[in-house]
Image (cartoon, rainbow, N blue to C red; front, side, top):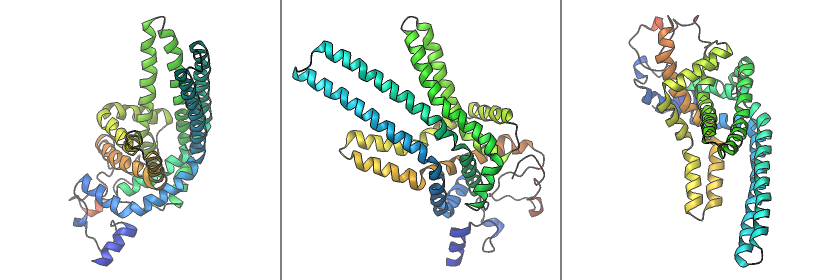
Length: 330
């Protein structure tokens, strides 16, 4: 039994001699629990590898957070001077305007720098999506070699996707400010202001499907985006729920920071979580979900395509390889 456990921990159970076909999970939740348990240490290693490409993003965020903190501290200092009577109200208003303009300038610069920083993450997101997709359906994947191969095969579509993603916050911010100023003269401009925000949010939610589709099927880029948006709209409640679930650690850290004096510890805990496990775990949860969605809406409509991979079925074992030559990549 101990040998069975060790094989399961290091390699997963599919294809191992210690397991029979009837040992396979019979539900998606069982499959998720089993694969998460056996792949947890691998997810940590995968996350550390993936974090290397996010260093530029973290550097940009850290630098501009410090600038924003300095600006906010300056505003607080001005307010304290007004309260103490050492600064006239008129002078406060003029200096406050300068600080607010400075904050807007810092935000705009941060989003401009974020475009290339986010763009380079795309191909590597395809790599981690391929690994977690395989692990979520209890298939083998080497962390380094399969990651590298997935990056090489999908880098063009992935780079285009991440470049668009890099521009999304910038476009949302510029349109929000622009239409917000126009809305002061006419309420009509609230509509394009909110519409821009909704389109940006829909794009970010569609990424949940874009990368798994990219590494699983051979699709032209236009078809890839169309299918991503169709799945986002078709599964909108679940998509929003999973996106919110991925934000829970940040929300906990924010709540601890706001309601307790342990700001530094909350920030440190959130930082360590995302450095060690956060991104790969989020991708693994997403892969477990998208595997089920693809089986329901795509694979079930492809003749001969394999469905319910990793789950126990009563089909003949000879049918396991029936989908080798159909549209899916792997």
